[in-house]
Image 1 (cartoon, helix red, strand yellow):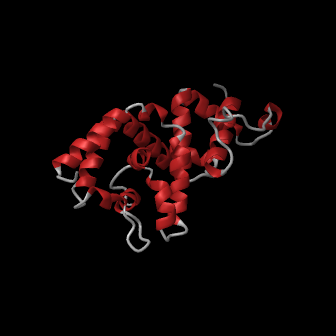
Image 2: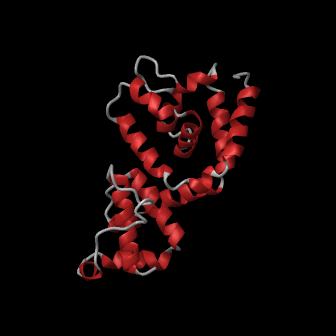
Image 3: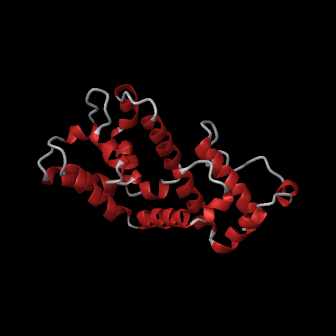
Length: 204
């Protein structure tokens, strides 16, 4: 990849997380841009620097992990130590997803008396599954996987009174979900982990 390729990826992924209508996967990352306009940018050096630093897959995950945190990060700020840490943490979670999901499920099952309690919103409050995600006690990937199985997001729309945090979390999860197909190939494994852990805690 050259600097202009990185620039187009950056624009596409930024739009994906920021816009309600643009889907990076559906539109194959297509964005309105031109090499001429790119060559006039004062920050084009940053894009070239990234093209030399990462593979295409890693670069995509680099952008994704940081747009998840903030959907309008300027390219120059993506060289901050925090941004690099987010990338390595996200990549690490992807690489160890089965182990980490098992840990998360064990934690969740240890903190409820009934399996359904994980999803219950009491008096419009955040359900435990969402609360534990917001407090970073479980990963956002775990939350997305649970939604794949139980469709909790749509139910929460009518149950959760919070008009700010929950809608933003849902948007991020659905946008991020577009890039997790490889992880979700393990759905049978995840299903088995949920079932066996719930049974071990007498929740089923």
